Image 1 (cartoon, rainbow, N blue to C red):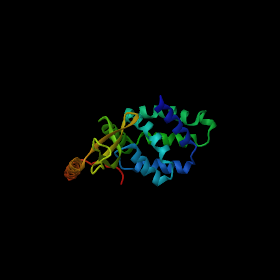
Image 2: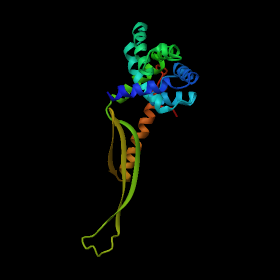
Image 3: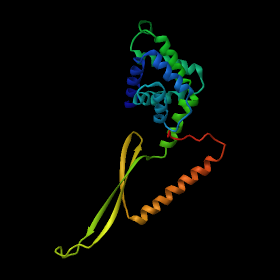
Image 4: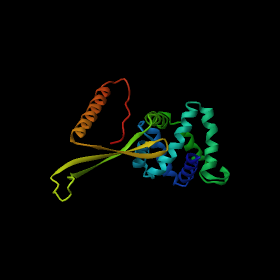
Length: 215
């Protein structure tokens, strides 16, 4: 229900945008290369059309699910347009200026399988792995080791690196923290470097158009 409400609000906000800016955004989506996530696609469209990125993310997230359902079936796609238009304008189309243009734009968005459709499926593939990485921080601390006799001056210490990994799991954000010493930090660096090398090796193949995050 939260996602449906999100789409309703995004449709109404999109309908209230100046028609020429809306058209620019629709063309940007139609022309866009597929991205690895909806947020990346929204970022590219926002840069080109100057429409709020968060609004585009909410709109495209909702529409991507519909694109996945209708696929290339024009009749099914056309059946969704009046429903979306009603959510967007909240009244009779005949009473709303530019309603026909908005209906046409919504239909074109639902037909954008090669950009929006592929992006939505790519995001589902990535998110389907459970906890998906979002961000990381490392807090490095010096932790003195005290003697049993607390009046004796501490002259030993351990450097502890606390790695905080932030992730998205379904609709929820979460985080885990792990503590490492220098050796474990170096081992982690090797693992990450190996993953980067493996991806570089795979990208040498021309078999697929490998999707990547922007930047």
